[in-house]
Image: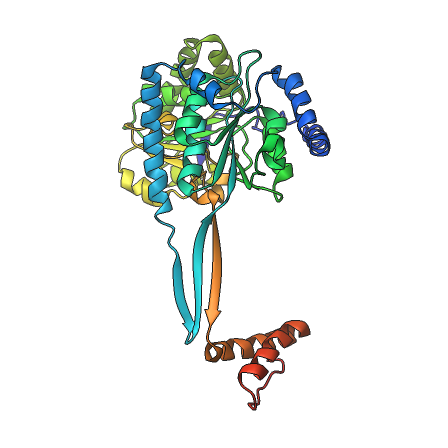
Length: 434
């Protein structure tokens, strides 16, 4: 495969990685040892907020009144789309049972976790959509208690639209606390909350590290890095649309990679020409983020044909993958490594980020090569069960006893022996190693 980089990244998403583990570990240890008091101290230090931590019904209702009816309708629309898709996902999980051998029945059962902790970023941007994505899926899954946790702004609290979204999507508790202390509060069951069985949602490097450290004690959706996006485009693509889509994802942060992979040199060169002007036209903070992301992390890759384009994309395993090319069915069948796929000019990553129904909590940093994003399935435990008649247990017990002895696990073998002797007295069995 021959590829040419018309623009090569100067940095990678981990180039500026700092060792935050020790800091996060010390905060978690302190909060676990001292509980609510320590969490409140960190909230005052980092959030600069000393208001209510667990929002009351009255506070929620009063804050929701601050949200315009127009925005409420948009949030309701997005919620219904995400709920509808999550419900369809849940219906793919079926309880089953099968007779393995005559008399022995085995089965599968799907059980939602009891308590979900949903982290909703609220620092640089108010992530209204993250409330919709995380809380809705937990609610559809059937979690009995859902905490929506979001960092408050000093002397203001959580953004009203986040509170409204969390409430309408089904949050049982809204926790005004950010960062490591918020994650710790959900994990350790502070402030009267049930201990979370799973933590979900995006966050900064400190939130990501806290989830990494706590994984095992609690479940997590994934460990997220900077968001990344790749566009596959051929000669049929509109260069301006491609350029706008790239800039649209670059504004996430200074270290958010965006990549264009194409087999058309003219398109690639036109996009490279267009992007700086589109970035220059953005508001200040957005412009700063997008400019740094494009300068340091973006790549434009020229391939010989669409098969090389697809192979390059699979190697990158992007979080978001957009195809603006002919024969969309071919791409849908060929591509295999992505968090979420957007086929055709008529859809775009921002649709999935905000309102179309698919989830926007997705694998980053190449993790799409082995996992998908947040879905209703993440909150479900797929467990198994079995029951047997005495006759049905006979061949299973015989095989178990012999395999166990071959492995040297005599106590295992004897759990089979005792049943054979009890259920089939007088029969002689060959219980030695196979």
